[in-house]
Image (cartoon, rainbow, N blue to C red; front, top):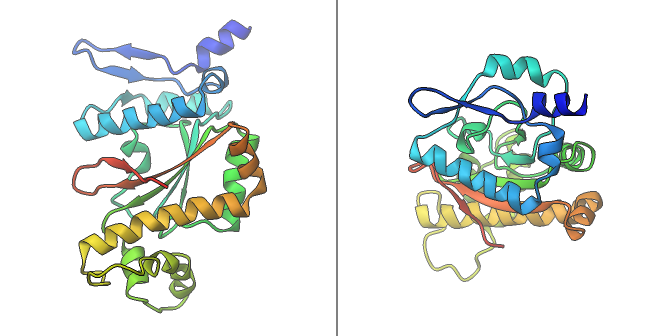
Length: 231
């Protein structure tokens, strides 16, 4: 029975007459648990490389939907902006059951998202938390310009510290300055990673033990490439 279960839920691939692979099964627990956090980061980078290169994996989503009913074992959770131009699963060439995705304008954390991350990692077994910002982010630009509008005001308060972080910057501090917008977008990712560690004792402990890895990235709108954000 264990062998049958393993075969059913491994991410097996078939190859068509043109050499293209097709995945028809979902990621299983045994395979996911065999990954180290560093391996998951490596897999995310490789998937993004395929996305950039236009060699996305073929998937039988209809079959995956049916098989995923029995359980889910995602290898990572990605916190992304709500921007419609950042299709997270496609960006990392992933399918049904591969990752958890949380989305909020400005890719900033709150209590609900922290709880979702704790569930993803502590309960469901995900190995990586990625905070994914992006170029030309409207929330970042609005935070730079100190926009105030309804509930957006409170949302932008989470991003605003990144916009005021560069005290020695001599360029124009405006949403019309691409260099400054990029700097703020990266800093916002760093701030979110820092806040996750400081606001979630559960996740901070898991990271200290090497059970999970927290990483940041910036999605380039022009190329599709996810660039690492150094902390």
